[in-house]
Length: 200
Image (cartoon, rainbow, N blue to C red; front, side, top):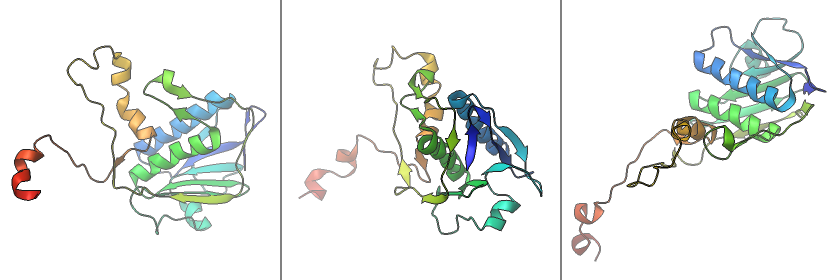
């Protein structure tokens, strides 16, 4: 499906008419990065019957159901990318899955990378044409918890700019980190389970 043609928009980003604010935010992210890469600004619209032109369906809507694209067989945070000659579906199993599929698309098909938090860590390749081949791709995390802690150890982060520290959360989201559980570790296992008793 042709999305950008010689720097001109050739598709719309479409949401269900009752889409949550998070989905609109993701649509704006998709729009912004495609615009930065190609110069083309894709229109964001609500789905309605008879919608004309090529469509990027972000999240569920009646057309996605009609196409038979689902995430029923996927675990938590899973997602499904499905493409035909005029419909591109980016569908997440849940809220995190919907976030993951948006950033996975930008990585896989647009070459965008987020190497570290903040704009200086962003890699946005330039192109004037964006076309996605027909096919589908499904993915779900293998681990229920995926975490990269960024902690202060004494004065270790004194030199970090505030803009860096303030954007760690969005960077983790773009890396598809997170999960359904949070397991904290401590430095007291030797006291909790003394080796002389439990590790003979």
